View 1 (cartoon, rainbow, N blue to C red):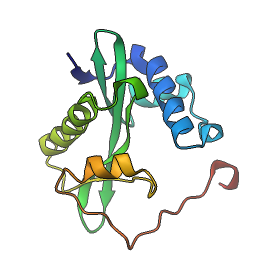
View 2 (view 1 turned 180 degrees about the horizontal axis):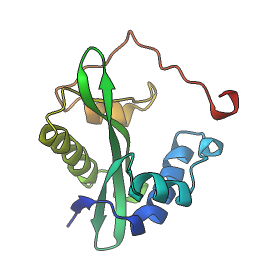
View 3 (view 1 turned 90 degrees about the vertical axis):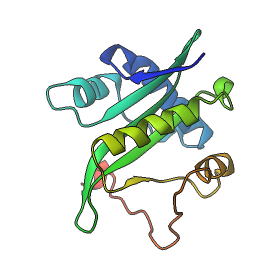
View 4 (view 1 turned 180 degrees about the vertical axis):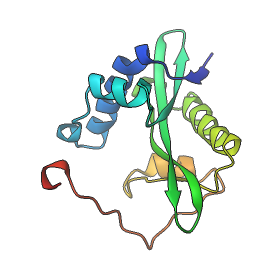
Length: 151
């Protein structure tokens, strides 16, 4: 049986392992620069920057969804789902659906005007997963970023 709960500080070690597993899957393990200490401070300190939900079964933590509040001048407050990760051995168990629904319900609880996320264009399993929901896939917008070393 899978249960979903809010993440707590002692989950950070497992959360980092899930993040690193996702980075391997996405062929970018060298891009993970976040640390346990940073995640503890930034997510569970005095002014938390994110909310996370944990999926677990009898074997332990098998997934997580991490989101945060953001603001759009056009849409107002929205929730950004940064990552939804289920460990490879637990995929197709329903954990992803339960995690997504936790973020969806959290968004509704906050009366958010939108729930937003990104998905890689080659990640067909994730795209198929999200197509089960009443979402749109935006072909117009390009993600832009400036990395830390250029700030």
